[in-house]
Length: 203
Image 1 (spheres, one colour):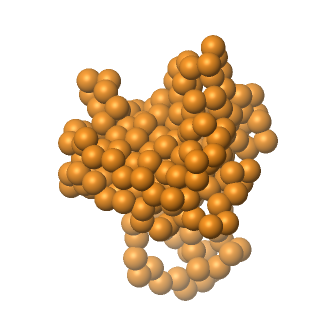
Image 2 (cartoon, rainbow, N blue to C red):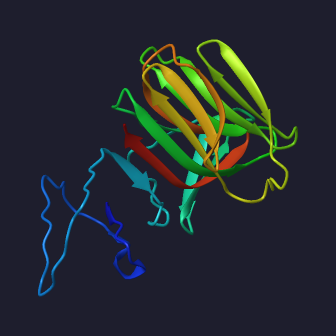
C-alpha cells in the first residue's frame, strides 16, 4: 500500500501495490514543481478494505475474527481473551490504532521475544479508566469527559530509546520505562473489540 500527501486535497490519496516497491521517482509533466522535503518510513497501515478477508499479517488467537465494512472485529471463545497478533521488526516504533470494544476491557499487548507481555494499554470503559503498564510500572488515567464507548477512539503507543509513551487522540497519557524489546503486538479484548485502522511506523 502506498499513500501520498501533498498540500492540496486533490492530490491526497492511496493506491494498492501488487508487488514490493524497491524505488520511487518524483516527476512532473508540463508543470514546474519544487520539492522541499521528503520522508520515507518503514511500516504499514491496515484499513481492512477487503471484506471477509483477514489480512495475512494477523494471527488470531483465542477466538474468531471477521472483516466487514472497513473494520475487523475479534470475538473471544469460551469467555477467554481474544487477540490479533502481528510482528514488529523495529526496535523504535510508533503504533496507532482506532479501537472500540466491550466494556470489560480491550486494548493493546506488546510482547517480547520470550512471549511475555512487556507492556499493555487497556481501556475499561465501564470503569472510565485506561491502564498503561510497562517494565513493572502501572499508570491509571481517567477517561476524558465526552468519551463515548460506542465511538472509535485513536490510541498511540511509542517505543523510543528505552521509553514507552501512551497517548489518546494525540494527547500524551503516560510515559514509562521500556524494559524489553517488543517483537510482536496484539489487539486484544476480554470479550470483543473492533479496529478500523492500525498503523505501524518505524522511528
